[in-house]
Figure 1 (spheres, helix red, strand yellow):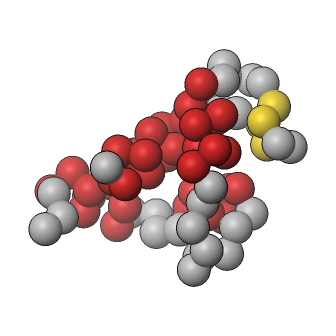
Figure 2 (cartoon, rainbow, N blue to C red):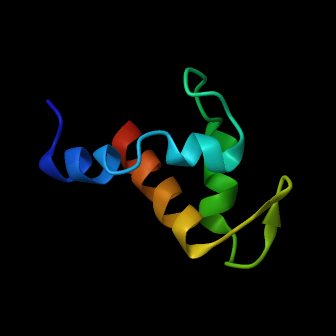
Length: 67
């Protein structure tokens, strides 16, 4: 069962994190990449991606949804 916050969070811009990171929609995002982005500071670069506040929010939502 999907929680209400997940429905509202992921229905607004489906696939936004995949597009932002350059992964196809059917492919799972690597946990290591999500962990690196979550641990880094805004403005730094992780594997060629600039970490922004929006990217960190999307990564945190994806990590919480996987649990």
